[in-house]
Amino acid sequence: MGKGAFDVVVVGAGSVGTPAALALAEAGLDVLVLDRFPSVGQGSNKAAIGGIRATHSDPAKISLAKRTIEILAAWEAAHGQDIEWRSGGYVFVAYTPREERILKDLLVVQHAYGLGIEWLDAKALLEIVPDLNPRGLIGGTHSPGDGHCSPLLACHAFYDEARRRGASFRFGEQVTGIEVREGRVRAVRSNKGYYETQVVINAAGPWARAVGKLVGLDHPIVPDSHEAGVTEPVAHFLDPMVVDIRPAPGSSNCYFHQLASGQITFCITPDPPIVGEDCRETSAFLPMVARRMVDLMPRLASLRVRRTWRGLYPMTPDGSPLVGWAQEIEGYAMAIGMCGQGVMLGPGLGELLARMITGTLTSDDHEVLEVLSPHRSFVAHEALK
Image 1 (cartoon, rainbow, N blue to C red):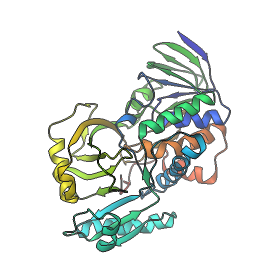
Image 2 (cartoon, helix red, strand yellow; image 1 turned 90 degrees about the vertical axis):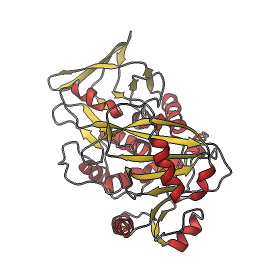
Image 3 (cartoon, rainbow, N blue to C red; image 1 turned 120 degrees about the horizontal axis):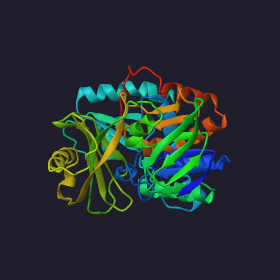
C-alpha cells in the first residue's frame, strides 16, 4: 500500500501529465504522478502520430504549441535523448475555393501571432512537396517551423528527466477518490495507496470526466475514436506533414507524414464522430484513407501498410482544452480535453501549469488561461481542430 505526502498529485502519465511533472519538479515541488496503465504514455499518447504545429487559429493553442516546438527542437542538444524531432513543417493543401478561402483567412490571425506561415501557389507548393497530385491544385499554406516527433520517445524522455529531477511515478494505480474537506483538496486515494496533497491536477485524457466526478464536477469531455496506420519504411522523400481538409465520405480531413524511420504514418478525422471508448480497428478505415491518400499523392499507391490502430481523442464542445483551477474546490486543477493535440500542447502546457501552481504566471499565461478557462461559454470553434 503506497502512502506519503506530496505538494502535487498529477492524475495521468501521458502527453500532458508527464511534461507537467517535469516542470513541477524543476520548480522544486514534490510531485507524484498516478496512472492506471502499466507504464508511461500507454493511454492516448501511444496512439498519436506525432505532428507538432503552431499553425492554429486559436491564440492560446498558438502560444502553447510555439513553446512546445522550442522545447522539442532543443531536447536532444539539452538532454542527449533522440526523440526523432524533425522540423519538416506542415503543408495544408487547397484543391477547391473552399479550402483556399479558409486557409487564406486564417493567415491574418496566424501572422498577427508571429507565425512563419505563407500561402504558396500550386507551382511553389510543388517545389516543397513534388509528389502532390498537380491536377486541380490551387495552392496551400506552408509553415516550415512546425515539425514532428515520436510521441512515445518524447513522453519517455520527459518521464526520464522528471524522475531524474525527483518526481515519483506509480503505475497500475487507478484513482478511486479525491478527499475534499472544508472546500479544498486534502488527499488522493487509489486502489493501491493514500497520498496527502493540497493540489491535484487532472490530466487524465479521455478518462478526465470520471476523475472530475470524484470531486462532484461534471467535465464536458467526451472521447471519440480516431484510427491511424503506418506503412513499410521507404527512402526519405517527404519532409512536411501534409493535411487535406476537404470533406469526404466518412472523414472531414486526412493527414500524413514520413517518420524518421522512413515509414508513412497517417490518420483521418471521422465524420460523423465515433463517440465512445471503442479502440478496436475497423475494416472501413484503410480503404477510406487509402483512396484519399493516393488521390492526393499517387506515388503512395505502391506502399504496403504494416498495421492500423485506434486511439481516443478527449473532445470538448468547442474543440479547445479546459485548463485552470476549479471555482468550486480549492486545489483542484484541470488540464483536460486536448482534443487529440496533447502531444503538441503538452510540453508548453506543462510549464504553464507549473507557473500556475507556484503563483508565477506571466501576462501571456493569463491570456492563455482566459481563452482556455473551464468556465467559459462554448460558443466559438477553432477552425483547424
